[in-house]
Image 1: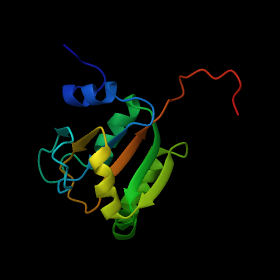
Image 2: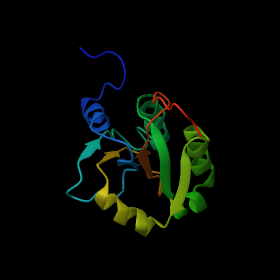
Image 3: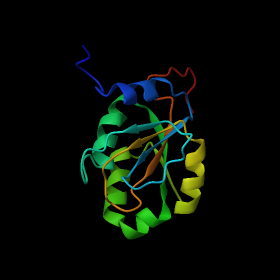
Length: 140
């Protein structure tokens, strides 16, 4: 029986299939998920879990090199957007796009993990990175 790491077998499967620069979205409860995209639904109740709680666990086991959020998230929920940005850390590239563009981009991600978060626009597209374990003989 698995007792360490991410216990949710569907999240573990999604992460283990991702390569460098593949993308997933951690989304709020109301995000319109394209019907052809695989979904792992971890929503339990209103605001359970929240996006930042899921992100905290995922980033321990998943190398993230970039994050994309909607401009509307930053404007309408600036403290939460800033908290997520800080949680990701300075080594993760942060960018913003219009919510409509994020919905278009969601049609091409590898998977979506849906939370119970009721914070408007709290959707984070994560770009898979190579992580710190990779050996580079001549770093920049």
